[in-house]
Image (cartoon, rainbow, N blue to C red; front, top):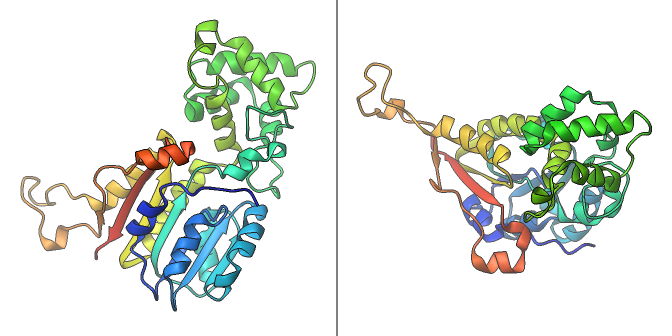
Length: 311
């Protein structure tokens, strides 16, 4: 099994405030790093973990076999977690967490096509049961659609030029591999851009991955259902890795935790009746400390936000 270091592990588990008899949900099982720490703290409680990647489910079930009586792993998109909990007869939960980064093993497995550093068929599907992949996106999306995806999800200032070049090249032959796509991106960007720190294809690959897996759409659904599912005293911990995700989490948390004045007088202090149902546990986003950054460079862009239902 690939060695995977969970990001912001201590901060997440502390933020979750695990109760030994509680019911918890891990929306992104991965290789089980966060789940394992929750399971260690449960006595009569239960953890239900989700992942779109069947390999992650199989490997983690083996890794967490000692906790099998209190652990359930489900192969499904986390946008469906509420439906899956209903099928298990579970209504309210004591805590929920998500690490929204792409699992390291997915990047490290060249055949998955997530990495711009290795040659592989264009893929990027987190759930291999899904038919739509990066190959279909690159070879069937119109110029306008490609530009939108690159601009909105990659925030790359050369989105239109890259999209135009893709459309020109695929007119003769399909674009099939990550290396072909990287070469196209490099051919469009001026030398001064190629000299900058960071890989020139990073933002475009991020954009494709987000679109292929509908990551932001799934996150919007999961955030709404996560907050609605919490018991009083229950907490939600979400780790994001880029501004688009973090903005969604921040806005969702602020919407349910802040009250501006009252309906009768916007200048008056809120009464108990007007107080929000949730409170932010950390007003400032939590990031990795120097020790973690040294051990796990992938934690550099990680941001953790925590919220608790109070009424």
